[in-house]
Amino acid sequence: MKNETYWKKLLSSAITTAEELSRHLPIDREKIEKVIARYPMRINSYYLSLIRHQGDPLWKQAIPDIAEIEDTWGDDDPLTEEAQSPVPNLIHRYPDRAVFLISSECAMFCRYCMRKRKIGHPFVVNDHTIDAGIRYIRDHTDIRDMILSGGDPLLLDDERLKTTLTQLRAISHVEIIRIHTRIPCTLPQRITPELCDMLKAFHPLYINTHFNHPDEITPQSSMACAMLANAGIPMGCQTVLLKGVNDDPEIMKRLMQKLMSIRVKPYYIHQSDLVRGTGHFHTHPEKGLEIIEKLRGHTSGLCVPHFMIDLPGGGGKIPLLPEYVQKKEPHRWLIRNYEGKSFEYPIKGKNNGHS
Ligand SMILES: *Cc1c(COP(=O)(O)O)cnc(C)c1O
Image (cartoon, rainbow, N blue to C red; front, side, top):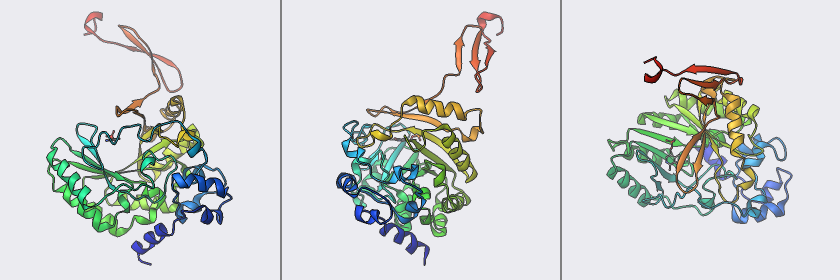
């Protein structure tokens, strides 16, 4: 079967009803039906095949949970993305970079999605919204970093994606392009030699992908990442910290190490956003700090991403770090290392004879 036909078939045969799902997994059909009336489900046979048992970390990401509709907590759009959209599907929050949603499709509907409000009410992406976005980017010469997101940009056809990339590359102030995609994890069959050949004409092009658990790193996803890396695309990973999935320092360490082994550099661990219907995934910020604490110094620095919290109200992403400085005095700081041992660091300055 042609590469393109194969991934499209996997996508179009994805499971979307409780009835179909019950043929594969032991589920409570009635509960699942209630949830998907509000928040639809999509699970393709590849990701389904990775689920090992009821309630495991991959199950939790893919299978609807009644908690989604019992949740009264959170907001549909806590990061006020809609208010920061000058034209439809374009979010401009920071001075030199913007996010452009160029696809409304995903290979799987992740239950904890930050854009859960949009799932099942597919926002419109068409020639008109793409043209309006391109015009905005062309008119805003301070945008030097364009982030393509969605939905998943890699669910566009090669030709369609190529057209948008060509339009962006024609804008001289756009220095780098990033594609934010979960495809290497949820539908790695989409990463074809033809796609990689097309993408490598648009360098400097970066990909940030999204793995949350070491069990997602399979021969298929490793192959997809190798093909992209071989096309010269630096790969990063944005992981979301999720209760019952990866809120455990040992699991996170294994994930980060495995990512490095497939040439994907851990970029961010995100504190999960306060999105309605996802409260059961939420962790205390201390959990993220504990994870960073148990990575830094204990494994390669390359395996240590930044732990980020996206401030509600559109304040943007802020890194949180464990406190290593124990005491600041004029002539010395007391700093602890990763093992908790304290060390003195002398401070040179005008007032203490060291200048
Ligand atoms: C996360 C985000 C970015 C990119 O942030 P980086 O820290 O540069 O990766 C840009 N715009 C918006 C609206 C974002 O949410």
